[in-house]
Amino acid sequence: MSHAGGLRQLDVSIKGKSYRSAAGGTIEVLREMAFTLRVGAVGALVGPSGCGKTTLLRIITGLDSDYKGAVHLPDHGKLGMVFQEPRLLPWRTVEQNVRLGAPDASDAELDALFGALGLAAHRHHFPGELSVGQARRVALARAFAVKPDLLVLDEPFVSLDAALAKHLQEELAALVTSRHVTTLIVTHSMDEAIGLADRVFLLSPSPAHVVAEVAIARPRAAHTAAELAKIQEEISQALRKGQVAADALSRDSTEALQHDRNPL
Amino acid sequence: MNVASRLFSLIVLVAAWYVGSEIAGQRMMPGPQTVGLALWAEAQSGALAFHLGATLARVAVAFVIAMAIGTALGVWMGRSRVADRLADPWLVALLNLPALVIIVLAYVWAGLTETAAIVAVALNKLPNATVTVREGARSLDRQLDEMAQVFRMNRWVRLRHVLIPQLAPYLAAATRSGLSLVWKIVLIVELLGRPNGVGFEIGIAFQLFDVTRILAYAIAFVLVMLAIETFLVQPIERHVSRWRPKAA
Image (cartoon, rainbow over all chains, first blue to last red; front, side, top):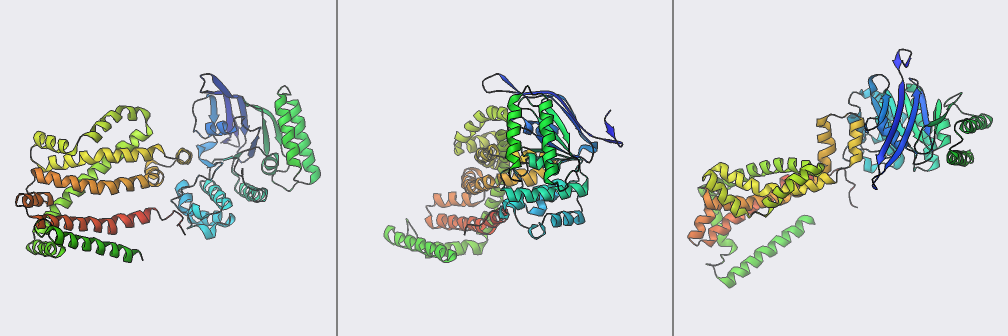
């Protein structure tokens, strides 16, 4: 059904996902969560914290198969993932970590990746010897080295200082642009979403579903202040149109918008 | 510095031994020089190498069997609650069964054979390895497991690069306590039902009330184990923990 240019796109349609709570009741985390992502595009999932974004990613990456509905990965379904924490093997060097994740990567490909991410001098270091930013770069290198059909990033720059996060975001944008990897990034920062994505999916609070979808006109390009204002206006409108019933969400998201606009 | 302080400690030990033998008398507590000469004589005749070799072979085989099965069991019990519940009573029973009972039963049921001896020793060490490794398996990092799953790492890679490095400190602890436990039990097994080995020799010496020979064989074996610790266990441990940031 969903073929674009002969390649299957990412097609998520989850009817429902609930957990059993400790008290014995059930907590619904996702309901009618559906979206598609064209091959080669970057989608950003933005939503209030605790809305079930991580659960959604666990389902997409196959770590959680206990849900109703279906998820179709892009062709071949090879995954590269960047978790919230780097999740490197502390007892293996930077290069071994990347090679263990991506055994098929050639030397030339690794050289290029390490070069692009400024890791060339750290190939033989252990993760314990790296700075926070370097460890995140290794996690990025590992995910890209796989040459994934779908790259999944779960708030990859959370808990980094703003300058470093900005810097890594630019490096990620450059890699995504040059490699045309279908990418799904979860973030709570509207800034990050606008800076990286072709499409921004706005999520409701739990049980989460996609409230609105906004296309970014010139993805990963330097936006002028006017353009940014326009995109943000578009997002606010989309939010208002899509289910205002959940006012908690609009409150949360406008707050997030205002909060994100300030540093610009 | 390290070597010097170790050497000093050793010299104090020998000196204390010398003083002790002067007080207790040569018959009860032969001095270092007497024992040294006896050791030399045994080495010259080839008896020392023969008995040491027999004992070491038993230690090695029993140790490898106990560690392999004990580790597998420990990982299984640490990761599966059902397995833990099912196997725990067996483990507790085995842990608390006196070594002597296991040895005597093994000899009664399987005869005074090499197999019985090895099985008895391995069974004594096994629960100890299982308990230690189970502790390690319980503390395995789920996040790394998920990472390995998402990146589709195969079983071998997961075992070698994700699982075993996490268990390494526990395996090291089990090895340390295991080696010393196994050789002590091997001596009892030899004393009770083997025609060779350090334990057998000590049994003979006991019947002749030959304290010199008892000490000579004990020291020879302690030296061998010390060498194994220094030249085998410690270098392996250093290699395995090379990634840990060094304490300044």
